Image (cartoon, rainbow, N blue to C red; front, top):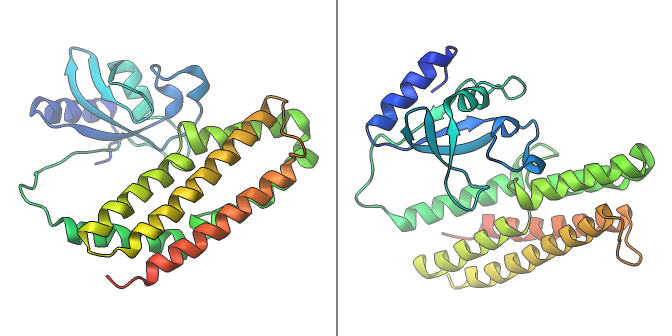
Length: 253
């Protein structure tokens, strides 16, 4: 659901919460006061879950936080209606029914096919496995184009989006590897266990990339480490993921 009127958006949120339903919504990271200052920047596509309220204080589950927290009504309105791209428009979504039975095999197949397709076949240079060489090319030019100080800031933002607040990097590779392990037994496809091992190895490479990039940001680079060698690592990760997701896309299910 999208809204133009802030009062209408909050009234609808209250109505759904009062029915005991959790509500997901799109917010701006910059206007979420419970986040550490280092995490708050202008990004209007952060999803949170509001699961209750006490007066003007709303109970929040945020994937960035270790536990639940609260946000005041005024701050939530500001985060829900932040200007910029994308425009948040007070967007919210919630479950209207809960399944009592689920076909886990069908869900696993659908999820696996969709992920393999999106990672390997999106026809744009900055998405899926194509995004890694695209970013690597930009990374090679950071120091010469931006200067030392701004290059470190840009590199720090990559780490932040990769490992701290974004949806890339090692953590999500390890999660996908765990999914592949479960799917191997669920679908009786033992070959998925080998793909899981490869995904774990790739996750380790993402972690090593973040570690090396972090040392460079702090002015303590590894011997021989440059923006060029970091770009090389990113390209190698991209090649490995391209092979893996192409294999998964062709797997008979």
